[in-house]
Image 1 (cartoon, helix red, strand yellow):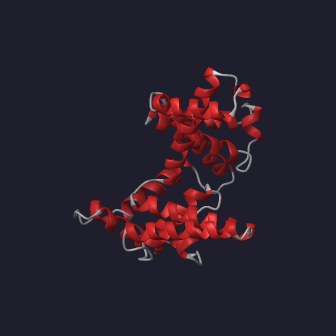
Image 2 (tube, one colour):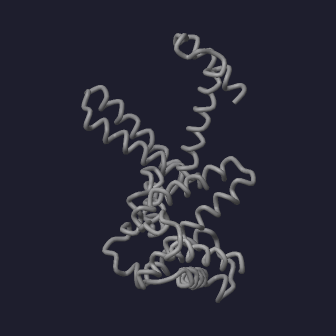
Image 3 (cartoon, one colour):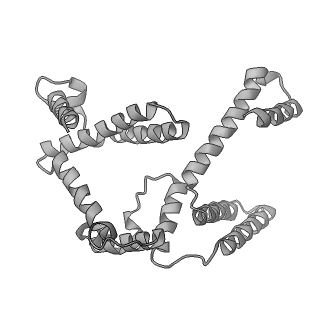
Length: 251
């Protein structure tokens, strides 16, 4: 694709001797926070919809090319190796499509994916199954990834009802910890509740990160409604509650 080749050439120029001073001094580490920010901007535009997604995906692609360029300069690998690697991985992990051409369920796809993945050279180096889940992931999303991973190996609740019973159990343990005014235990039990709620969402194939971002957006929109209509500093709680109920009918 000539447009992709042009992007590679532009990056070569920016990092070259006569390139941009800012681009020239960047390292893998210096780009990490910007890389993460671009990922979340992509997620936000997916939620909103519209043409902005095209632009945000371009920004994210730039970071991938940037990181590959730095690795190329270090004589480690280049962008061609990156693309070639993912092509081979996709074909290898989808034998039901590219080899046997058989119809299997989504659950079987996930199980096969994990089995094939576990035999790959870089995965075999890991001591534990959960070692491959990035520690930098947001906690709730990481919880869901942990649950998905162990589920692929058969460690899971039998049904949604059992998970909900666990959610209720954790709620009761929070009440008891609060009653005992045991702050360390209360913190632990709140964490257990969030983990269990995440598990419950997973059993309904709901992405917990998406659900939480939508809840935050909804709350912000409703609170913005209050600020749009009144000076928040002049309102008492009763008035704010009334406006909050009004916002629920609009937002």
